[in-house]
Each structure stands twice: as structure tokens, then as C-alpha cells.
Image (cartoon, rainbow, N blue to C red):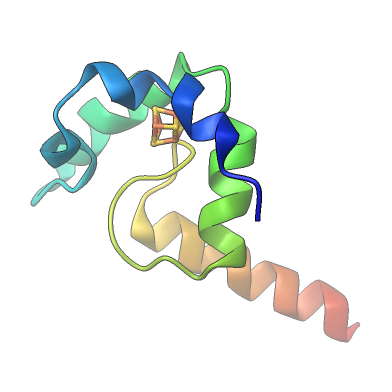
Length: 78
Ligand code: SF4
């Protein structure tokens, strides 16, 4: 799997702790950084494809990614 896009992530300018927040405020802070990231779509795809449970990836929280995966399963079953 191609991971070269990671070098272009805005998170490279931040502590990795920011993207593994312990509360909702932290999640919003991470999501704001992701919103300005040029590779956020690829990042989200990566996290969804690998079923990464923890952290904010591609501007989505763990809960949002679970919802997206559920929606994908439902649409592929229809
Ligand atoms: S979308 Fe967020 S977590 Fe993903 S590479 Fe960009 S800044 Fe990092």
C-alpha cells in the first residue's frame, strides 16, 4: 500500500499525541488541522481500508469512521 502521501500530511508539523485525543475537545482540535491537510482524503481511505480504530484520521473521529464503514457495508449489501 502506498504511504508516500503521509509525508505531505499536516500532522507532520504537530505532535502525534494531537491525533490521539482523549476527549471531544481534542478530537475537534485534530479535525481542524486535518481540514487544512492536502492529503486528507487519502488519509481517510487508508484508515478505513486498514480498519484503524484509534485516533483522528482524514478529519474523522473513531466514531465517524465506524459509521462510514457501517454505511459502506450496508450499501455494498444492497
Ligand atoms: S488528514 Fe489529518 S491525520 Fe491525515 S495526514 Fe492529514 S493531518 Fe494527518
